[in-house]
Image (cartoon, rainbow, N blue to C red; front, side):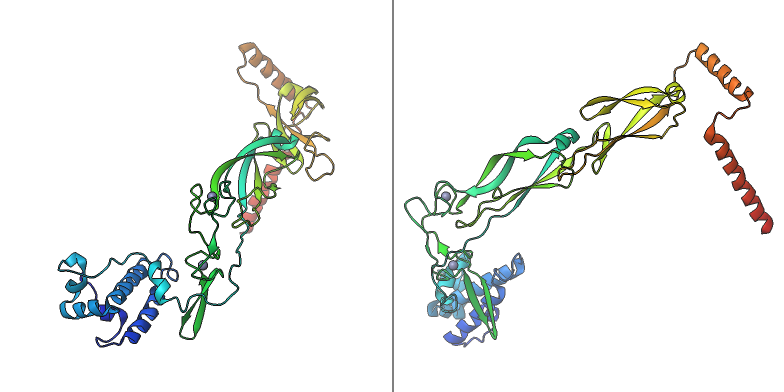
Length: 382
Ligand SMILES: [Zn+2]
Ligand SMILES: [Zn+2]
């Protein structure tokens, strides 16, 4: 791609004065400055062009060479004794050209402190752990205050100095026409402090990444969605600012036997056809052992039995929940010839008796009949 003409890049005429060049450069450089166009590759390219154009045209010797020979006169890559410098670092040129508009005023040396970020940790618990409470050791990767420099970011024995770009204000003001834009100082990133001799352990950051082991006490009765706040266990603050908090978010895993709804536990219990018919005693599980459940005769499938106080003790206080067992009658399988014969005999005896043995069946059949009668009546009407 051929290089753009330096005068065109800056939008000036070929006989522009030094003052006009400087004014044009400021205008264009601000327009394409990377701080104002974050993640804009196009603007970055334009910014480099503008910078390069000004570097050449603001130097009378280079400008003369450029006027005579074009890019070949100043570009080192084109050979022939160039004067140009690769357009690289953005910030180096700011000190001299923008020095008069950056910063200025404001109480120098003001320390900018920031609170560390809050962190969230998702902690998976079994139902038993959630119901009875537990102490867990968790590993938290986080930023901690660097112990080598005590968080200052300056090498031991040295200390940060007031930022020379913003005079310690942390903000710089950019003027463009009528507008004045305040933005974070590019040199010190808003801290107001410059580190000349950075700490080798944290590279001037003041914080280092560590994996911290923490003991968390999970109170009994927590459920999915509950959060436990560990004050000050988040990321370290910046420049001595307070640490953030750590939020431990509880996620309770599914249980093989129980489902939880608030403080109640639900459990499905299979029972045999004979026990359901004749009544009997069952053993049902609870979270801390087995208990006996008396099943009355003629128990139907789906019947719920409530065991008071065998549920969950709520974490915020209040009465303990219940355990609710739902019975499900199992159809016998793998019957022997004799057993099948007995069952057939039994079924025949039920039919011969003239007594109702299936409480729902008759109601159900009546319902079906009623449904078809209504349907027939409807068709007749139509
Ligand atoms: Zn350090
Ligand atoms: Zn600064």
